[in-house]
Length: 107
Image (cartoon, rainbow, N blue to C red; front, top):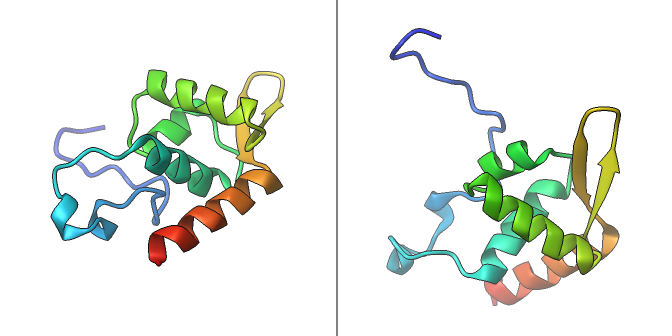
């Protein structure tokens, strides 16, 4: 790819959008629970690899793996292994948790 060309977005609606943040929280880091919610939101509609997930939720790969391990131990995401790739998706339990979290944040 030539210098200065624009890379197309993988997803037109990322799971974590800095524009959706509260103006008062500008420059602050996301909490542990907010990162978990971003991951579940990204995995709610499709299976993603660790790299795809890290890009969508704006994390490095090591942190994404840590969160995936934690969420899978809690039963909120599931792993699907194919011949070459491991892909992850939110479980029904994870989607239910995400809905509860979003309802609490809105109120």
